Length: 485
Image 1 (cartoon, rainbow, N blue to C red):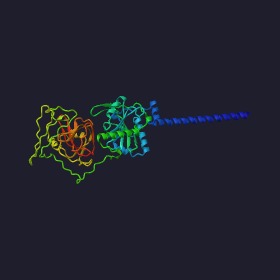
Image 2: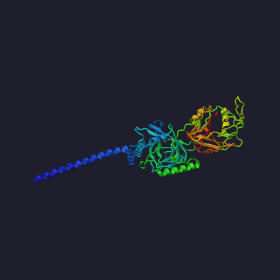
Image 3: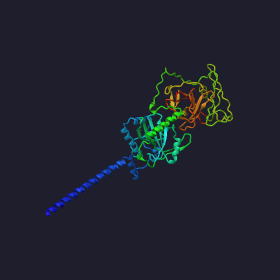
Image 4: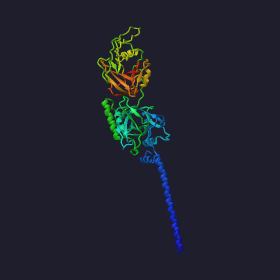
């Protein structure tokens, strides 16, 4: 009996040690799981559960507004650079890269060692969609735009904003509007990249400055605000395939209404370098300092119809500035300098506003009514390509060769004069209000309508014939169309 009780005590002791061992192992496993789980939650805020938990615990701040001088270090990528960087990645690698981009954004790039990819270049809006609580960003709009440099790139540009600003956003971000993302003004960070079904690369980006914007004609304004709460569980990209198809169809209809090219974007060539001009294929004439006057009288260009009709007894004007009529020019004898065309005496109403005539003005009057060569895109004679800002330094100086103008413009007036010369007045969409571009179009062509957007690159630039600056600071850039549509 005594031995039997001894054996029972030993068995109970052994059972207790085994139970404690199991309990300690379970606690250790739970500790390891909690430790690994906390690392996963903190290391992957791009997951919906992780983001919501970190926000509730106060361990993750909402996206913040960066100052231009305190923004995270990055590199600026145009459409071709974006395609070279993300378009060559395998699907799994691209998915992992997108997760890392979003992770850095949610952390406000805190302790990020990688350079932030910023989008630059010109993009044309295809469609705009309002955001709601079921989207990743729950207030504002997202614009789907196509790159003007590489049509294989689509941009989902998110505009986070308060509900009161959404109506202005939708009114200003119209289909066909050109968006120019500049290095010095915009910090638009890439947060996602993917391929859509037609093979194009779609980039999702959001501006880190969350600034205030106004249209170039001051017809409206809106302000962006950093989102306070994100629906991370909704995921990226912002637009599904149905929304993309709707935007593409909307954009194609816009192009047809404007009479523009409606070729599918996937069939368009990427940016091309102009081919060298063959001397035996395209005649190239040396530029002369002064155009020789012709023997017959030169018809005078009358002013275009402007936004508001002037009084019937008012002197002829062009976009608000009086224009004197040129007299007929007759051929001068050989070996004698050509006399400038006489200028009519200014009336009291125009004496103060009319600048003194210059030899360059007489040259323009003699050349704008004549015909000129028109080339295929990219086949025009070689010359120097400038933008609208460069023309400030060209005012009232003789040209040293062929010069072309590129940029994005808005048509403020369009029409033709009594002699049939077709002409349009353009203004830069970048806001240089004291510079206007006066474009002559060859016979048989149709000038763009008033209010239409015009974009020209190195394949279809305008050729500059002269640049003049008046006493009041107004700069007139005279150009002509030298490429076919």
